[in-house]
Length: 161
Image (cartoon, rainbow, N blue to C red; front, top):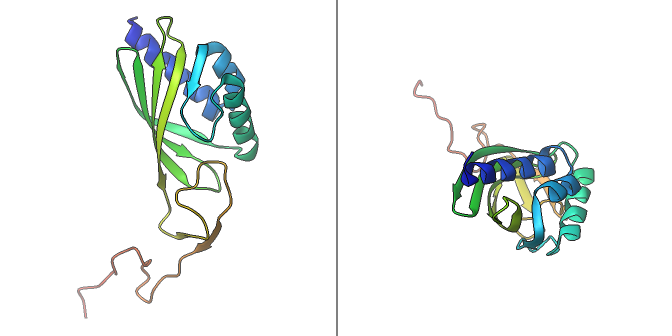
């Protein structure tokens, strides 16, 4: 197995432990290097801060999971493109970038999240987007117009008169 394939495997397993299995402490123990730099602003920039954040997410968002779409690697970087499902909240399309050391351990992380909303949800009274784990918004269902369409959808017309 090449270093690139090992790194991709390690990042995929790290991700599965955190999101699907709710085991961030094990993920850090098994797959993080001696130093770990976290660039996501809602997570402390150390291993314990990471563990605390994702243990809380596992409790508050039971059933959260990810569907990995692709894993791309070059040199000591691995990029994961995935869909994050947060039950009862918004889903997110995510790009996570990991830097690994020569032993295949994760030493740095960046991410970019894009909210994926149901067209029936309208957020009121909050900033956009809300990071996972923050539930400070009120949500209401959007009304359908007389054609049966949501306001964001094109009306459905019939060719028959």
